[in-house]
Length: 133
Image: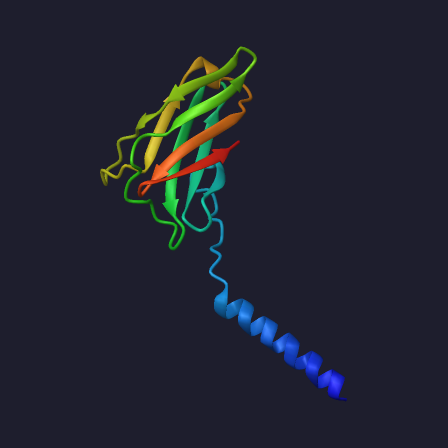
């Protein structure tokens, strides 16, 4: 009887502490049909849309709290690609948005045609993050 009460109390406390202290944010659904990556731990999310036939990559950055676009990145991200010829880098540019936010970027290159592998270094609010894909 005592063991049953202790077990029940432990279960209740663990459920309470998980819901009370857990700050993890849900990964948002892709708004543009791409893949969503987490930037840091609960800092932001990045959606990447890749059109392999055109060699085009679109990147959208959202905050972790309400999945709205982040105010701005410190600079446009670059794509560091692992290719057959070694490491290659593709620069991105700001994608003009009606709200003038610096959270939407694009990159286009023949290096982005077909399947790509690499990483995207991102600087957000002065802190560097690395997203591998």
